[in-house]
Each structure stands twice: as C-alpha cells, then as structure tokens.
Length: 271
Image (cartoon, rainbow, N blue to C red; front, side, top):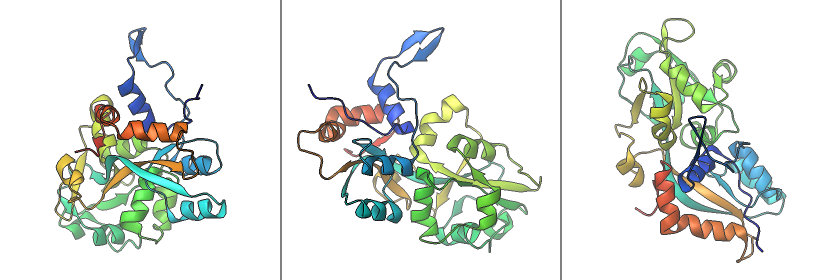
C-alpha cells in the first residue's frame, strides 16, 4: 500500500484541503478533520524538501539562496506551476495615489529617496513602508520584482517588519500609522487577499496599480500585470515515476485538481 505524500503545510495547502473535503459542524463552527495545522514558511518548506523531510512543497519560486542550498546538498528541484498568484501593493483608501512603478518602489524600500506620498502626486504624509519577514513567500516575490538583489532599508527592516500577512494587512487598514501623520504601504498576494477578504473584513484596503495596470484575474492570467507569478508544486527530481509526489503533481494538474484549486480561491493554470 502506497503512503500518502508528505506536503509542506502552507496556508495554500490548507485552503486546497478545505475545498476538497466537506467540513463537520461542531459547536456551530466548520471543522475539517485532518486539516494540516503546523504551517511552514516558504524557506523552511524548501529546506525540509531538500533534506528529505517532505515529498512536495507548494510554494513560490525558489530564491537564488535556495537553489544554491539544493546544489550544495546534491539535490535538483523540479518546479511545476499549479496556480496563479501575484504580488500586490496595498495602502489605506484615504491615500489618493492610484499607481506605482518599480523604480518608485525601489526608491521607497531601498534608499528612501521617496518617503512622502506627495512625491507620488498624493497628500503630504509620510510613507510608512511595511515589509515581511525574509522567509515568507511574499518577501521572496518582493526580492524578485522590486529589490532585485539589493537589500531593503535597514530602518524598514527593523521598525516595520510584519510577522504575518494578516498583521501586514491589518496595519494598512489602521490608517494613520505610528507618527500620526503618515499612511502605510504594504504588500500581499492577490489571491490570498481576495480569498480571505470577506471573512477577515478587509474592505478598507486600497490595491494599487503597477505601471498603470490593475491586478485582476485577467491581467494576472495574461501576465500583463507586471508582478504576476505562480505557486509551484516542487519535488525532488529523483522522485520515482510511481512515487506519491509525482502522483500528487499529476492530480494537481488534472481537471479535478485545477477545479479544486479554483474553488480554494486561486487562479488555475488551465485557463
């Protein structure tokens, strides 16, 4: 009897599991028996996969450091896109700026040449740039699309690092931030935000266009939106053809798997 694959328990895995299984109602609440509870961050998912602790990681694409770590361990990774995702930048609705560009974001996050919304055509208020911890999936996309090999400003890293996606979004919702005369700028993932918006009551969030392109299902699918990307099912290349890892990968790409991914709130790659 073949054992089931061991998978990194990222939030996306939890959402796919919920979409694939009917919950029980216990004390008026939905409960999914067997739902993975311990949540790995992206970097730890990769490390655990490379070291043989899991069979499949469902993550954003690997960083240069992860690929180097895999090479040092003598492991080759296979990364297969299974659903759409995108990095988005968010702020409070009181901010009148509608769109940002990569050069502007770099001047905000790297050297602080831009530190006031008025420099972007908005109100005279400081920009309180928020960031995530470096082992998160959103930070890895921030590195890819914005930082591009450079480091974020040390003050931002020390003062405004959010330990979770929820904390980032809720700080943006809070409006005036810290000094009372500033508005926050944060980032998150499009499908994650859209899927959780209703339950988390994230109505008071403004999603900014990038280079004049609004992030939505159409622009992300067509890659017109500049920060479009994927979630990948990552396995070790030495996984046998009949392994649990490869069987799961085949199922995720099947019509049934893609339908469940869509039901979980993510953009499927079949469209």
